[in-house]
Image (cartoon, rainbow, N blue to C red; front, side, top):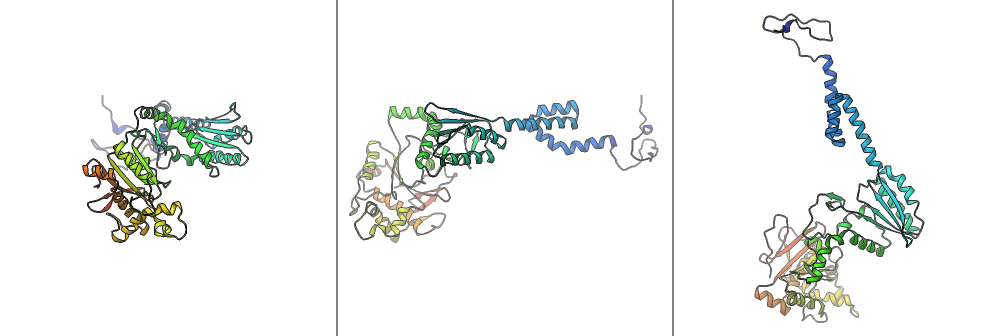
Length: 438
């Protein structure tokens, strides 16, 4: 059986009739879509991005099933409605519970995302806390939007202004770590020690700490450590308690609060034997009026008892001790103070700055203060060699001395290349390179 296409009617929105077809050939005519297909096809093309979004929000199998069962327009409408209902459910399913402890303190525990929709629930819960009470707000780490954050923060400020205390703890999940902005990021690979002391600090911007109670802020940090970090490192610390410390490195640096040694070296408990003082200075035994045995004692213990294999002296940008040396604080008239006596240990660095200032390999120094900061590192390495225990180990080839500098403004570390007498930046591409030490 054959079908005569030339005799088949063609639907059209005009009164014109198609010209008869010639044998084996159709007459040329502009291509048009039938009216009963054009509208649905246009609706499908317009709604395609929407359908993809709904599929991601509600689950592709669910939305696809609706489209198959009811067609594109009805299926997308049902899928969109389901997406809206699911979003509303997620926004409103937060729980805020308030409980009183026997000691009179209160615990406010939140579960689920805190969004603008949860603000009325937050208000009702926080109103249950009496004035002057010590309160711990425990946030489960779910999403926190700006409206909810502002509400918690304003309540905290008001509660503390009336004599109360507020501690805020944010729960972190095992597979989360801090992102560049301090918020939680899923799937972060754990480090070699599972110890990140700066992790709670990184997320503290989400619910701000009070600046008028530094001791309370310190205790909040201790509580956060006990809740989040201690369980992760308790096993390692127990091992160190049994076996004792066996660090491979002595890290001598400044007491500046901005320099976090474990952070910039990616180290953990038991890795670094650390000595910190003002200006990362190593007093020379021959320095008149500036003798100090505390650093020498720590160096001797590290070298002879702990048998460390390297000693790093690390300076940093914006060092107040170096600025004080340039200002001549150590030479001011009058009875010397402990600080002025200590700064006399930096006179050798000032002399070296005049005769052989240190330089960077890939950039100029910012100013004279920065040049003194890196020159001081070189000078303190020389003064470290005056320690008999250090000199003996270095000559035997069993101890390595390393100079290091950290720039806060760029979060960039530099190491001293002794062969070139320059500080070279440490980059991710230099895994196999090692600084040339004394």
